[in-house]
Image (cartoon, rainbow, N blue to C red; front, side, top):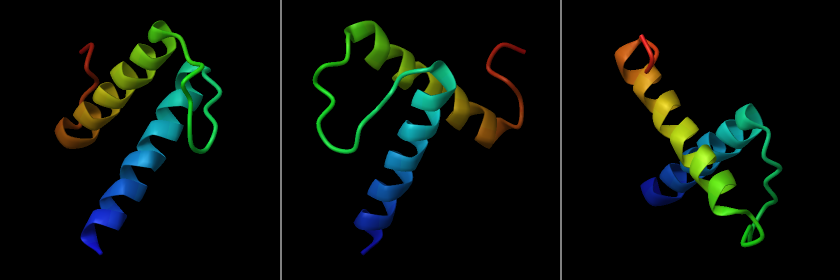
Length: 60
């Protein structure tokens, strides 16, 4: 059960990050994304997690 909650939380974080960087993600397979798009989503996810746990922006 905890694994399902973690997966849903990660998916939510991914969708939020994609929205912030302007990448349109679909539910399911997103193999049509460029490496740059996928990397920008991952980078934004790291920034969001950093900010959530430290309370400061990554660039501060």
